[in-house]
Amino acid sequence: MTDEFRPEEVLDFWFPENGHWENRDRHEAFWDERMQGGMDAVICARFAPLTEAAAKGLLDHWADTPRGRLALLIALDQGSVPAHGVGGRARSLRRSAARGRG
Image (cartoon, rainbow, N blue to C red; front, side, top):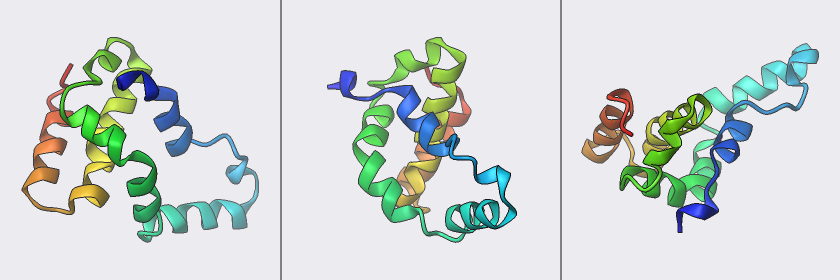
């Protein structure tokens, strides 16, 4: 099951190599979309199963590399809010990320 998830999938989504930084308007649009809540539905649709796998500890092996650990932290922190809101489950996932599970 966890073979279907890759750290690069998370990192490519959060840090896209799309050249948005080369044009002020594109850069502002990129951040507006990310910061104004427009990404919640996308994150849920794309990363909910991955976030759940991370929450269950099934992706802890990602923490064996620096890029994998970063992807795990992003999945547990950023993926938990759209999927679980700001309640107890989301806080628990973010605490796990902050402790550096894995």
